[in-house]
Length: 206
Image 1 (cartoon, rainbow, N blue to C red):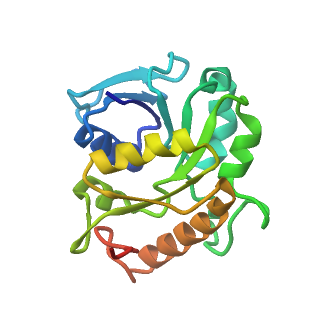
Image 2: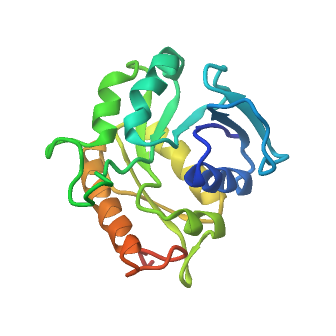
């Protein structure tokens, strides 16, 4: 059975926990506070920043700006893990540009900072949270696009997605993360403008 650690406690963290639950995975959520919440799930083990990561897959469900702090605590623990980057590096004060170099991506920058034994996969950034919770996008199964350089890591991510009843599409090497982030940027802007619905968004038809 797959095990997953999700760092972060926001909407996407909860959505990916839903995905993992449907896939039958063992779930750990790492958050900043140890205080309990009425929204806690019975099928999740909760921990605080600094606690040991128990998942084979580690999802960074925090803004890209929080990555340095996360790496301070967990860089060495990521060795041997599949690290899933879901971020979209948008300047939310202007909504007019990505905040990484034009020839890079958050996933590429992350891959330079984690141990050599960690495998970074870009995934879930083109999906609005509601489409992950329901497993549908409009009238079609939700498609999750992903990119990475490590075949075994991509197989693991695809297995999680498909076990949750969604469609997994490998778009290529980690360098394709730049295009995925541009797609995520556009979708978020359209949603903010009311051009798309939170339970829909971009869909890839079979």
